[in-house]
Image (cartoon, rainbow, N blue to C red):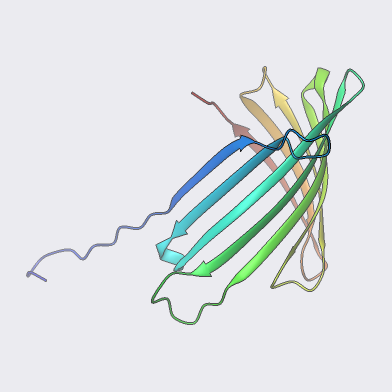
Length: 156
C-alpha cells in the first residue's frame, strides 16, 4: 500500500430474484420465486425458493398458501461457518375491498429445535404504494417479538 493511501473499506450485497408462473395443474403452485444472495461481509451466500398458490374464496377474499425453503452456505475461504437451512409456511387471507391481508405462519431452521409461529396484518394505503404492517412472531427463546412498520413500494 502506498503511503497515505486509504484501505478499501467498501462493502456490498448482491441479490437477484426471479419470479415465474408455476404449474398449471389443478393442485399445482401458481407462482414460483427463486432468490439468490451473496453477502461478502457475512462471508455467506443464500439460495431460496418460494412456491405459492392463491385461491378465491367468494368475491371479496382470496386465500394464499406459501411454502419456502432456503439454504445458506459459507463463501469459499470463509472461516468457521457451517451450512444452514430454513423453511417457512404461511397462510394469507387477502380482503380485497379494503386492501388488507392477514397472515398466519410458522418458520423452522437448522438452528432452531421447533417451529416458530408468526402473525401479521398489512393495510395498504392510498391505492397501494404505502402500507402499514403489524406483526408478532415467536422467538427461539419463547418470547414474542412485535413490530410495526410503514412502507413504500413502487414498481417500474
